[in-house]
Every structure is written in structure tokens, then in C-alpha cells.
Length: 101
Image (cartoon, rainbow, N blue to C red; front, top):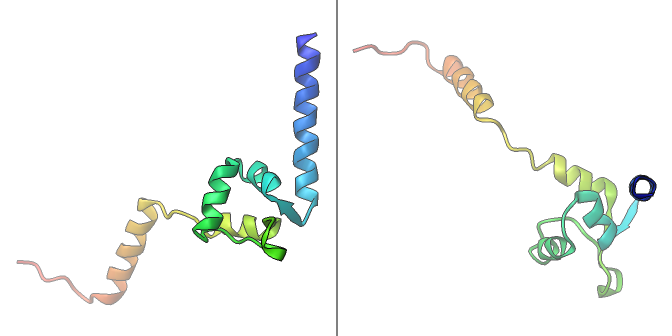
């Protein structure tokens, strides 16, 4: 019986995620689910204007799913290896020769 209940819960979660992916405009609850963050975290981010959102009429908060996904992609942290390669490339282009002492 527990296995059946767990399978039903899993199925419910999959359906909820599919519904969110099919919508263009999300509520705060749906955005929190989509980003896997708490509602209080989303409220804090909107209060600090860290995340794109809409408030028609000034009450409820809405989000465009595509803007949230773009926001995620724009928040990329560059790995230190990539930074080192970029520095080496820049130095190789700008300095003709290194002075050795």
C-alpha cells in the first residue's frame, strides 16, 4: 500500500511540473516550485528586486517562466579554470615579450 501511495505522490509531482512548464505566467507558488525555492525566499528576492516579476494592481505577484529561466542562465558563475585561461589568452595577446631578470 505504501508503494502505491508513493507512486501516486510521484505521479502528482510529475503532473504539477508538466503543468508549470506549459504555462507562460506563473504565480508565486508556481515560481517557487519551478525554481525549487521557498516562497519566503521568492518574496525576499522580489522585495530586493533581484528577480523579474509583475504586480498588476499592486497585489499579487506573477512571473514569466521564460524570464525566470533567462534569469537563471544569466546568473552563471565562471569557473576559476576558465578565468585563468582567459587571463593567459589576454596576456598572450597583449605582451610581446616578457622581461626576464
